[in-house]
Image (cartoon, rainbow, N blue to C red):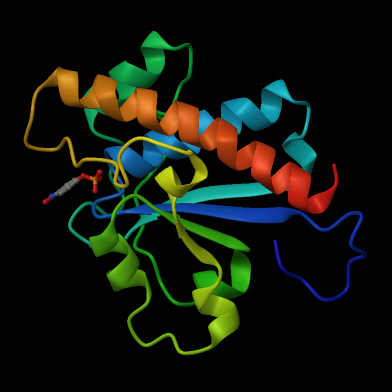
Length: 169
Ligand code: 4NP
């Protein structure tokens, strides 16, 4: 979280995962990242959330197929509720982590401060190889959600390692 009256040692690192609907991919990314953070005993160092660029599903729980996929890995994401991304999120989060190029274009609409542009990254950029985008599983079957889980679980682990290296904790 970005606030001006805290020291560097106790300032939380804000990480926001963004997809289109905030019901399929970004809830899984939020759940996977949170699990990595908690397994590392770093829960008090991070502010973690997710959002969608669209507003169709605002207020809804994650898609049941994402809830089920997370549950298979021992993670409960059923309490999450979808919300829409806003440019105010640039003030709240250090890292705005998108699932695909279309999300990146959408979160950058009207953003011209280079410091804000630099906050945006694609999740799979945290991996050294493999695909560049987390595929949208909404119109597919359960296999798509398994694939999304594998990608976001690996990439959020790598993202946490990168953040820890950069911040020295
Ligand atoms: P998400 O998937 O962006 O991963 O949450 C989608 C969810 C809903 C829709 C599209 C993608 N939709 O068109 O309603």
